[in-house]
Amino acid sequence: MSDLPISTALFNRAMAGNKDAQFELAEIYMQSEKEEHIELAEEWALKAAQLGQVEAMYWLGEGYAVYAKDMLEEDPEESKTYFEHAHRWLQQAAKHNHPTALLELANFYRRGDVVEKDVAKSIELVEQSAKLGEVQAMRDLAFIYANGLGIDADEEKADFWNEKANAAEQPEA
Image (cartoon, rainbow, N blue to C red):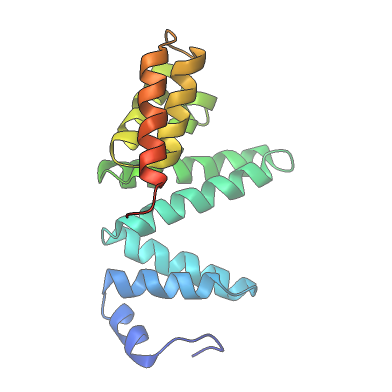
């Protein structure tokens, strides 16, 4: 099969259409430096995402966004294509309330990557992400309110989100 730690049982479950096994295979393949394994990682992640595996949707969206940013100067057209792929998969994950996907999608609206720039929509998505427990979104929202970025500054809301982020980062006693 491969020089990676892939059990026959995992491979068989993936081949049988188990979306979680397919995503697990994608993650294993992605640990490799070999181009053929990276391609297999994408193929398995796509299969899992198409079957509704939400983490695979996010994983693809984030991966395509990183690749698009890397390609931006070298090949703007290819970059745009990958930003579109990223946006589509992040939107799918966001429909399932994936907090990190919502936060990354907010960046698309903040920057205007393959969507019309919409700061209000961006802030709305950051807030959705924060309410779902994404600590980075809480920090971003505190910064947005503290500095009045796209909205009126509100020190009380900034403090609220900073306190929520601090509480979320505290280990359980």
